[in-house]
Image (cartoon, rainbow, N blue to C red; front, side):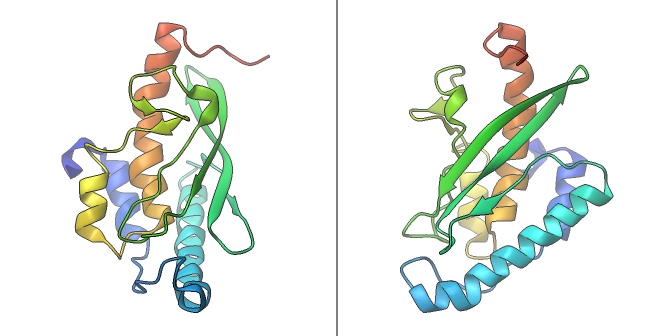
Length: 167
């Protein structure tokens, strides 16, 4: 599976801290006191890495209890920046189950997407998540899920005319 990611992605994921807590949102206290803190530390490190390598490509925020995440992501194609709102909810069975990242405005514009704008991660990402659970977290989902999906699908959708430049 990992052979499908470019060397930059592989290098980035090696530097994202692995998580140790197995708590999910159903484990309220453990989730808040341990796992969520680890998630935030991992995300901060990933964001710092992106800024250091001049490859900043997303913003992220969460609700108070850390169960709903959203932000903006962007992809630059032929010197034009394409920006999208994205979101996901932490599944009740997290971290065993990977989050399903959604880009609602792209719903129906590519076959590599499910209803509601959920990006398709079944072939490449979900087996890797299952193998690395509970050590992977939100930063890993962005690095190994959303980023490669954008890199593959955005140029394709632009070429097909499914995405136009926003004025």
